[in-house]
Image (cartoon, rainbow, N blue to C red; front, side, top):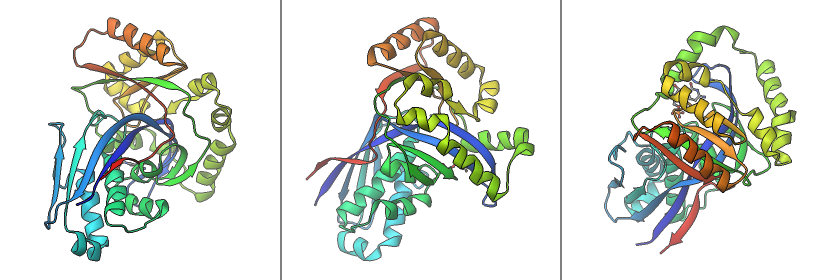
Length: 316
Ligand code: C5P
């Protein structure tokens, strides 16, 4: 039986603006999404049975239908019954390196890897856009995780427009391992507090999207101007998450004071990151922050921006 080993990178939001709400219950967003080198590893192999078996080395990761990776396999089984009949079920093993419930799309990237892996294992020949359309059914971040790199994302986050790759910067990520933020709570609270300023007409939404396209952030990315990028980082969800989680607000402040190009919360949090020019700068900031907050639950990762989505590490 063939086996694929895949690399599934995490993502951060360099920019997250909430424009309005949608009839499907989601929010209309304008974002800049960025892959990072911090990645999970997945092994996907046919098992010759009728079952999907999911294994994960992390005790807090569920291995049933509540895991996007499991749902991705179910979706492929439903969509391609002939391939399922030919090849049978799959064993999926996730080696989790991305922090869980962190605002880094850890679950979404595993789901994206299962779509890519089954496409290869079952020799379906699906294109990246076809895999991304399947990914939309699983979660707003899954289509981006398939292709990765640097992209403007609009709609729910599933409409992607790749821009110049930004892979020259480093970052330090920090997260309390005993803290997690519910994404639905963050969006619901944002709507309660800021819903009155939502734009809901198509022209207004399109104009915000084109402003971002032609604005200084995208220009700074295309010129790889680290300091400008650092100054322009933005995340609307900080407005609701930071007041509710003072530990995260304090972490952001300490990282900010420690240096780097700019500091921000990723997605709905609670991970905070600082962009840096070099690995040395990221390691120094990590050391300073660790000294200032002596909490054993606070974890750090030093990693780099990446231009990769799901990629094959090995094929047997
Ligand atoms: O799509 P995903 O499952 O990742 O979204 C998680 C939750 O985040 C949704 O159930 C919704 O509450 C919120 N969300 C939203 N608008 C988006 C993306 C996510 O309201 N564009």
